[in-house]
Figure (tube, rainbow, N blue to C red):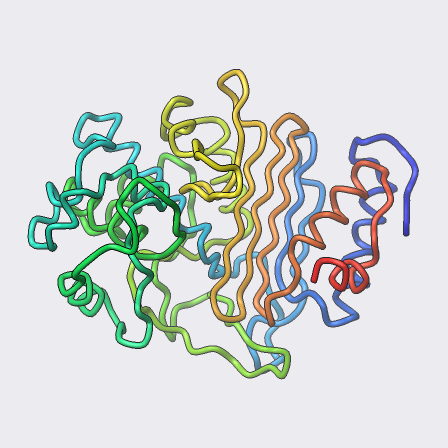
Length: 338
């Protein structure tokens, strides 16, 4: 166990310790990605560590956009609540109201079910789906739900897929256009790319432990890639209610079981304020983590692109260093977590 002394504030010593910890993780081959740490409302550390692709010839830069996996689902969750606040939809509306050509089960699934993964829909059949049209074909052929909507929880991407399609039907815009017109400008996001493909500039590539690179392609639409700076901006937007009200934020976060995810991943509110917001995402060799502790003014953002690094172990050590507490070296922490 390692420990540094000092107060919980971001002292010069803690920043030095953070740098040393991250250097050790990188040298051990356990971290390839970009890191941003804010404490007491100020950014105290930004690191770009490793390679932008599997060639090992291009270093990562702060301007690189990363696949953030499921964290991108926050944008459609907020989009749903924006339209609800405008009175253009209700969380009690059924999917059939917006997409009437789906089977009869769509009359039992509410928008709220989609928001909280209680729809009963099965997951996307990735063996038969290469695009949105394929997934719609499968949904139209679906005979029955896995369980009656609203009775249980199953985290999967069909809920996200239909949330985005509802937004398109109500707004009259493609989901990408909705984000670019209604969400990104007001949130302060300046450098996002939706559904990057081969040839998209400043997009980090994922690769495995042997540097075999993932293909960059779109299966289902609506996935946003962000820089660490824009992800911090988004985190601050969520906790300061720049797009939706505290009540709407609470509606997203509310779950029947603390282990269940919502459109915001996991989080808590007290007295009308967000006191915790944690969301991770992964896709192929990418893994991302947004961990916000608003009472401390602390946000930890990790976006990685090689072999799904253990971002939670890294975040736990970062928090311990900032709080002057003991922490495990990364390799030992990873062993304990698994």
